[in-house]
Amino acid sequence: MEEVSLVRVDAVRVEPVTQTVPVIGRLVPTQAGSISARIDGPVSAVHVQIGNRVTRGEVVAELDTAALEVQHTIADARLGEAQALLTTRKAELDLARQEVKRLKGIKNTAVTSRAVVDDAVQKVVIAEAKVNEALAAVNSAAAGKQMVELSLEHTKVRAPYAGVIVTRSTEAGAFVKTGETVAEIVADESLEVEADIPFDRLSGLDEGTGVLIVLDDGSEHSAVVRAIVPQEDKLTRTRATRFIPQFRKRPKRLAVDQSVTLNIPVGAPRSVLSVHKDGIIRRQGKELVYVVVDDVAEIRPVELGVAVGSRFEVLGGLKEGEPVVVRGNERLRPDTKVSVDRGSS
Image 1 (tube, rainbow, N blue to C red):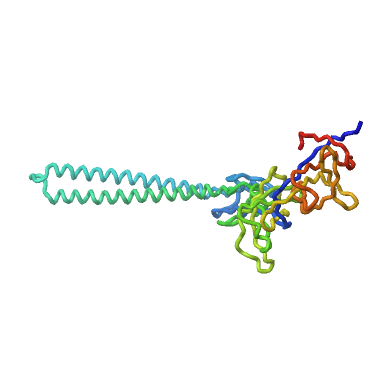
Image 2: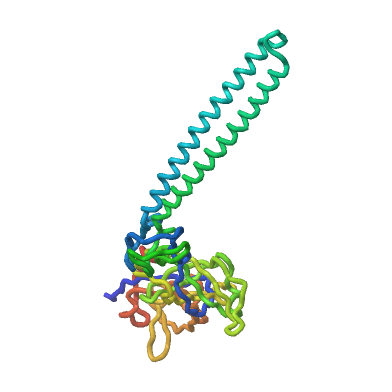
């Protein structure tokens, strides 16, 4: 009885392909910079070390608050004084208005005269002005207190966004001025890829174009073009291009300036005939495949072009739809009877 080999097949099919060229890029943060003091003051504590991860709003350092607390007590007392004076002025205004009301009730009698009423009305106007003046003093004192409270809040130097501390620029006991750097931070969770693309390779790139990127560990990921900076380096004739990586699973220990290889498309995509890479057999410098024809494995030389993912472009030797053996071909001989595993075809 003739032996029959069990094989798996994959059909020759048309695949879109885009020719690519490798370009070396680097990981860059979308946010990085200094965490700075917002007021002058002596440093009482620094809560972070280089390499610490912080969250947005986390306190990284504190300034001494003793002088500001005294200022706050003074500002609070001034506000109390202003509010007390306002209360007095409002009471004086109420009395002046009551006097006008009383005098108008007995107007044109022997007890009063128009001049007396007019004088009382003028006192009301003066009392109203004093109330407004006292109210302005209250607002000014309240604003002064708020300024001291804001300065007290600014004694806590906070991280503006989540990230990792990369430098620490001060210690407890030092004196910092407004705007002086306390630490530097990098938002390593929101990295992009930047690459300097030669101007003659930009034709295949537009915002939203997807590309394949390869990290140092060999892992492959996708990325899309976010922006092509419209400024060309006069020496290298390249343009900085930013890509947003789309990690299937975020790799560990990514770092700013880590190198990345990008496969940049050259020109528009085209459709090609393709065969699965597992169907290729290389013997004596030739590339061969087994094609199943009427349950017989027929060996056939093929001419291959560029790689298309897990497939190869077919330049000659095969037609679309032909079943090529991709499992079990290593033990086949020409014209062997085969049985196709239909679950994989």
